[in-house]
Length: 408
Image (cartoon, rainbow, N blue to C red; front, side, top):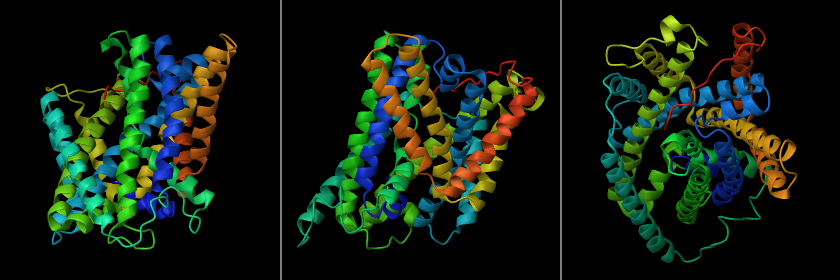
C-alpha cells in the first residue's frame, strides 16, 4: 500500500502488472534461496552463498550492497511515517515529524522495546481486517460507477510503455523485500532442507497475490489520469474516496503503525549488522563493536538514527525505495548465480538446475537495470566505496570479512 502512488505514477497505471512481474523474479529467487539453504543450513545469507560459491570479493560486494538496505529501510519508514502523521495533525510540519520518528525509533531500540509474538499476531489480524474492509468498500464503490474497465489495471493500450512498466517494477519489488530472511532461520526450523524452500516460495506467492488484489482495487477506484494530493500516501487517499474520513484515518493509522514497527526493526537489524562487522574487525571495533550495559550496540543505533534524521531532509521516499532495491537485487542476482554454479556447473547437468536460477538472474538483472539513474549512481558510489574499503581491510580480499545477516 505505501508504494502504490509512486508505482502508479512511474508505471502509468500498471501497478498490478509490476507486482506480478516482480513475483516471477522473486519466485525464481526464492527457489534459489531454498536450494542454497540446503547447502549451507546454518549460515543462510546471500553473502555466504556468493562468497563460498563464486568469489570472496563478490561475496563482500554482496554483503556491502545489502548493508545499504539495513540503513535505508528505517530512513524510508521515517519519511513515510512523517507523511502519514501529517494526515492526522497537518498543523505540525514535516521536519518536526521526521525528527520525532527518527528519535522514536532510536529511543525504542536503545530501551530494547520489542513487540512480542502475541502482539505481532494481533497486529497482523487487525491489518487483515483493515484490508478486508478496504476491499469491500472498493467493491461497493466500483459497482456504483457507470463505466469501469476491469482489464485496464493489467494493460491499458493508451498508457502502456515497456520502459515505464520496467521502472515501476523496479519500485514495486520493494513489496517482497524481506522474504530472504527465512534463509537465516535454518537452525530453528524443522527439516530445513525441505521447509525453508517451501516457506520462502509460499511467502512470495502470498505477498504477490494479496498485493495484486490490493492495488487492483485501488486502480479501479483511482484512475491514472487523476493526480494524488500526496503521492507518498496515495493509498490512504484511495481509502478516503471509497470510505470517507473514517476509512481514510483507519488505513492511515494502520499503515503508520506498520511502518513504525518496520522502521524500528530495520534500525536494530542495521545496528546488529554493523556490530557484527565491528566485532569481526571489518569496521573499527572500538566504535562499531561496542555494546552498552543492556547489550545494545548503542553507537550503531545512534548513528543510524542520525542518518535517518539527515536523510529524511535530503532523500525522497521514492529514491530511498530505489536505493534499498539496488542493494537487495545485487544480493538476489548473486544468490541465483550461486545456485546455478553449485547445482548446474559443479553438480548435475539437469534442466531443473539450469533454467530456474538462470531465469531468476536474468529477470532480477533486468529489474535492477530499470532503476532510475539517480539511484544507480548513488548505489554505485556506495558500492565503489565499500569495495575500496574492503580491499584495504583484506589485503586485496586475501583475508576474509564476515557479514552476519541479522535474523528478521
